[in-house]
Image 1 (spheres, rainbow, N blue to C red):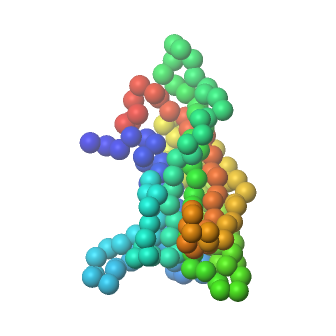
Image 2 (cartoon, rainbow, N blue to C red; image 1 turned 90 degrees about the vertical axis):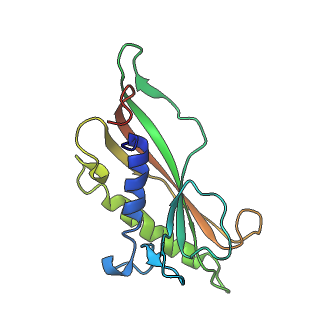
Length: 175
């Protein structure tokens, strides 16, 4: 079975963030890698909220923003809608002992750059097509950087709000 459109959007965002790696002239490496046991492992996750000391750093997780959207743009007689899809991009880094947030600032800047690159073809954002279902807009908000606090995270991290404008047919989410 095909993935629903919103999952395809999340996978496309994940792939875009994985472009942050030295091969593409970035300092950090968020690409997939082989772990110590020789298995393929990821540094970019979707929907995960619990991490441990064995997880790679740097790493990024994509989470749907739990706040309800401000408004929807559809009618009661049409299945077509333009909706905001809000995602939070959270990144975790190894701490700098003297300046714990410095790596978080650098990685968040690289993630923002990669996200903005997804808008290079404004008529095919994230390569998901030009007609519904498609991504009409991609807006990157201001990152917030936080030091380790042992409550949210034991390492420095950042949050970047991303809002996508989605044109979708609500009757055919798998199209």
